[in-house]
Image 1 (cartoon, rainbow, N blue to C red):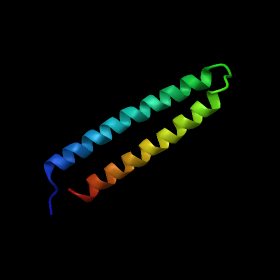
Image 2 (spheres, rainbow, N blue to C red):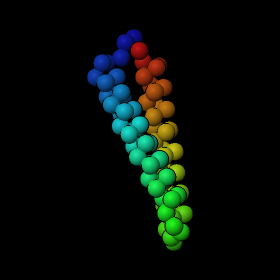
Image 3 (tube, rainbow, N blue to C red):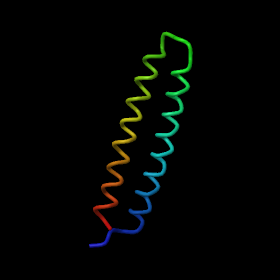
Image 4 (cartoon, rainbow, N blue to C red):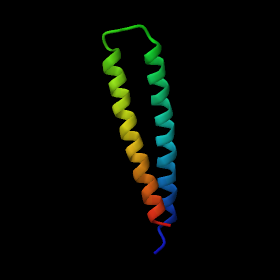
Length: 70
């Protein structure tokens, strides 16, 4: 059974957007690591790491769905 082309297009767009979000979070993390110590630094780094993990999980789900529905 073939999947709806609109669904595949949407999944590709979601995957692309997640890739952009992932790169931005990694850039923010790098910039935070270079900043001098601040009271919020550790909390912000952890928030970035948590958000990046969520983005990566969502990307894996989108990729798996694309591969399972040719």
